[in-house]
Amino acid sequence: MSSYRILFLGDIVGRPGRGAVAEALPTLMDTHDPTFVIVNGENSAAGVGITPEIADSLLKSGVDAITLGNHAFNKREINGYLDSGAPIVRPGNMPQRVPGKGVCHVERDGVRLRVVNLCGRVFMDSYGDPFEWIEPHLDHAHVFIDFHAEATSEKIAFGYHVDGRATAIVGTHTHVTTADETILPGGTAYITDVGMCGPVHSVLGMDKDVILHRFRTGLPTRFEVAETDGVISGVVIDVNKETGRALAIQRISGGATTRTAKKQ
Image (cartoon, rainbow, N blue to C red; front, side, top):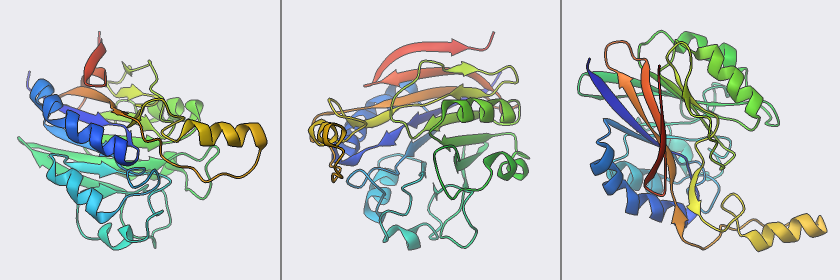
């Protein structure tokens, strides 16, 4: 049986996250030999948004596609870049008039992988129905979905909604790695949240003292990315090349393997 491998790295947060990815990526590529490398870059520019310069740097480092999320448009200069043809996707379930698209394709070794980005709607405003939006985009054997959502229940429900029709659905946005990676009954790889690539000893990547001040006083506070060493979080997914269904999903953290879930 012929197979290929996807390496996905979770939300890159600010300079520490970018540094951690730049440092770890060559070793990860040597160790896991992925066919495709995908990263979520929506927090890569000072913790909110992404710039063309950062996107170009990620793509030149070996990244094949970049997904975004609810902070996709926090840096205004990214608007034109999203329509440049670069392999970067913002949430597809946004109004059609906004720049960019929710789907792109990357090709290698005879595999054409469809990369999709969507936002959830629970506790997140102004997004269309992701369950309805995804339907016409499942007419392809190899579909990778970054579901950027807050509620665990919505992510799990969406996983079952696309099970057997998508290669993988990885959750992003909460920045905390969940330990529920699995292969769903229909052959779709799933994890509720991949976690972040960002500063350790922080609150979701932000300076812990700033966040503590906000919680303790209730006063509005300007969030700042913590300037501590960066760590990485991600998954490696093995896929049947013929069927597009997942064979295994494996969590990675800080470059070290934690465990592997295999389809029985």
